Image (cartoon, rainbow, N blue to C red; front, side, top):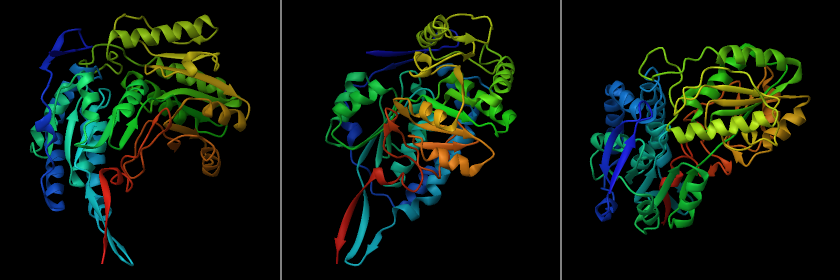
Length: 431
């Protein structure tokens, strides 16, 4: 069976790959390499990708539509930062743990099956691939059908006994996650996909799923700073980010100013061909995804929401950004994942109201609090049911902190000193 990748840039077939059917060779146990050898492999991977960042960026733009002015930075910034941090703490995190009766050794789990998404394929894949290899495992990588060249880039940079890849059907993926030779499954994708993976898996797994990430802007916030970052957090990558900002609650005292500034900034976005260096907003990944967002916005407007951005809509995968006010939680645009360049903004009259609205969600990946009072941010953050709390920042992952979600946003932990634990199993030596 042939898998075709349709570019959202112009609707052309960008890549064709034959789906794999025989996976036995992909499940061979990992080689016995020293930690120093594994570190050298991961350092070489980072160096190779950095040298190829422009070419990788061009491939990414064709495959998923992000403007070319941004795509190389997925490698130069996030990928490199995360990989190098995990390399820097590997020796500390993988060392034996002394105990009064002996010691505990951290053994590799075997084969780690990484199922990577299309929206940030290198950023999400590195969260599991590099620490899994450092911990002594082999990795089996399945990239999205939308970004198949990602898997091939990894395979070209690492020896096959350490990383293998396959282009697989949905049915083959579900069969593989149930194979006893898989030691761990790392999946990033939709809630529905995560539930299917969880039902089929025999091995332990980590799931990074959807989000409906909120922001709360207090009256004492630096409004210019909050607007600049929250609009970017909502619109970057055409809103196709798991931790993108999808709903904003603003203290009524500064609500009008915030909306006015946010609308002005959003109107500066340039929607167009992502290979034009002036373009800041490219197409969504496919026309169907853009149509889903259009329908969600139209439904909200029909229910009384006010749309503030009036750019021409070219149709297809190219979707203009949108800011909605007069919204509430009876509307899907404020409760269901949008995954597009749209954000709803609501005024609130108290901290308690903001906390209640932020927690009124099936998701819990990140939440941001905008205030000049850090103590207030910590107090509010402690009451938000989420994996990460940001203070005066959003839509960013710090590799020294645990990346995790609650509720329908998933489970498991990537990165930080905790990120190696899912790729090892404890083995006790009683002496």
